[in-house]
Amino acid sequence: MRTRKRGLPAGWYPDAAAEVARLVRGWEEEARRQEAAGGGAVAAVAPHAGWYFSGAIAWLAVRSLDEGAETVLVVGGHGAPGSPVRLAPEDAFETPAGILSADAELTRLLADGLDAEGFALAPDDRADNTVEIQLPLVRERCPKARVVWLRVPNESRSVRIGELAAGLARRLGRKAGLLASTDLTHYGPNYGFEPAGQGRAALNWVERENDRPVLEAMARMDEAEVLRLGEERGAACSAGAAAAAIGFARASGAVSGSILAYSTSAALSPSDSFVGYGAVAYRP
Image (cartoon, rainbow, N blue to C red; front, side, top):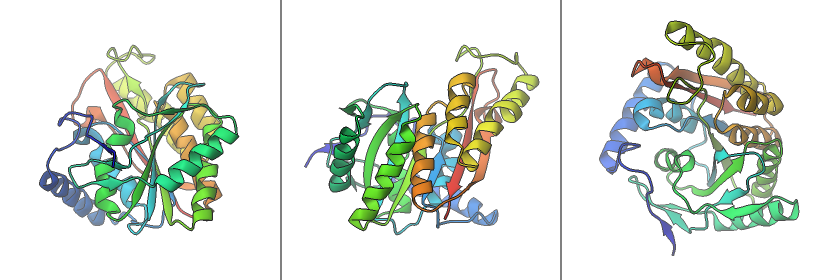
């Protein structure tokens, strides 16, 4: 059996099961205090920074999925328009919370379907945070689930990937959910993006004028606007993953989404360079 080893260093997320469990337990207690709804979502969007910055928000997205899911498709990004759909070839994935098995049958059928529709395909054989950062959370929420690991380009056809995945899961009789992975605006000198200058005015601009519109577009399932804002305004680094979530959700009976949470890295570590994080859930 081919098992994919951890590719990210410990600073991204813990390397011990006890620490994963401790953090998740704290996030879960806070979610319950806030009376956040858990379960019932067919798809969700989560951020993918290190857990210190975005783990609590990512957990709100992951916990919105049904804990009894048999398969969770974890859809990452970092793919420019025209780049291939990247599928992990391994049979299992190592996490500090335990091994996650791949849903090999659904992965194969999805690859065949994408190939038949003219998508370029490639193995995802490089370390990338967009999928890996979510795996321990999926393992904690859905301990019996298998996963499909893929990354998609930031283009309109990515919505079709979600639609196709939903149809194939239904054909196989899988109780499946999809978790899409994207951060929001990367702002400041570290990212070469400062249209609103620096200081409080810049943070206000990101929160109100750049991140809020893209989250609202995700919630109303407007994939074209999500992709436009990602491309033209840098409002999402992996907008194609969010588009795939919208396609999966729509094909699974959802007609709208709800914004679960939003924050920025500046809330924990004030800086002229910061990143936005949001979570969205789609329920039928």
